Image (cartoon, rainbow, N blue to C red):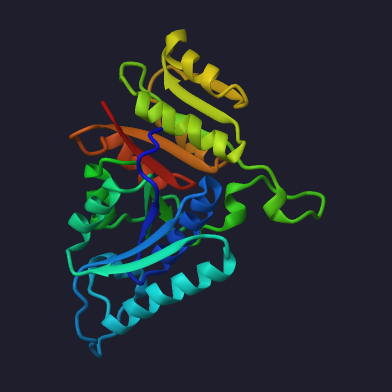
Length: 277
């Protein structure tokens, strides 16, 4: 991973999912010892008397007071939860997608919320989240509403605090035909930061030379490979139910493919979309 970008940035729009994403981003910033940047983008319309569901926040405007209150509340609550964390909260009138894409350039990782919903049909992902994940120059992590700190750790069985439990594996979906050093490097680095195992799922046979330099660079990371004959999507979805983070790639200049979009909608954990050559 490069070391010239120095923030974890999260988009705040007043929705429950964006606040849960901010909580995830704060934990990631603390793990990486980086500042946390909270960003609200877009104009703030005058409050109206309409009634709407906060889960539909990706598709409608939020009254100004609610958005401002959500941004301020997130900054205050996160500062209490993580007193050593450097937190920067800012607003911009620039529309959400271009503002978040610009912020991603200066970020180690950009974090966005999606609208969580239980059930086998998966959950909807807003146009802003998908638009940014398809075009950002840096990794974008998509976090569902309802994601909790204990969800990224192994279950506690002895009564010890959940925060002391080991992290669940980081799962990497890898295409053997891709030149994906940025993708592989992000997955190894993320696993190392968490002291978590890395599970690599790939179709067919992966050349030994693909992972060898990364194993040498991260000797403390336990790596397990899972070869799948055919479509790795179902195996990745299954693995995501027992993972702390699912990492998938997209070609630079292209949006996530159909398989990646399906994983984003249905995965049982946050999903990192990483651009690569």
